[in-house]
Image: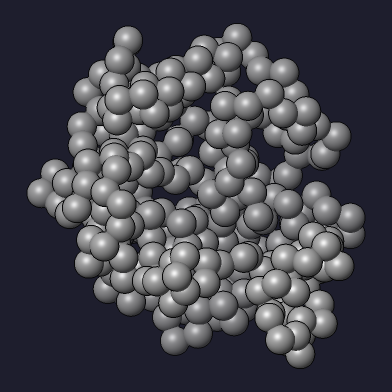
Length: 263
């Protein structure tokens, strides 16, 4: 990325990247469509990597509210469908895709995520695999690390009836609590349609929990109570939906033991 924007020969690379001569558009283009900026550690600003800081407890120990959406990767595969020239992943491409992406673990993954369990929707099955591997279980591991050192609450946004993006066709499978679904409830964003009455009520509950936590480090209050701290002994994950808020069957739903065994 540094060489792509012409900063590899600069005497001060960081200053070059921050310069007004280097535009945000150029930086994003250098990362590419699938690239994500990552924190750079080993600097005065961030002397340790986040993983090392969490493992050793060498971070500012404030209360933490950490969570994930139940169907994170539904958003990625749905987005691939609705983009220009996109289309649903055909059922016959499911196994080759899994083998290409997961190599020596493909047989075990195909056995654990049979296409028939997802209505023969390759997009939905691939989303389930990606959600569990890339989002749910890493977030759970992060909560375990944090909870050793500071007060930690973990949630899973699991509402199924979520709004889809304005101006885009709906994907071929249910998007549910996809990667950005919770944003429609927390902010007034033009990319989402107006919320229904039921969705508006859930938005009020979510905003209430977030602001209570920001105020005093505890998301409980009002009608929504029983949200216990996440600890190694009692790893409580709170499921947030338009119905009752209650403990999630998180490790079972996202096959935590399976993925831990693979890694």
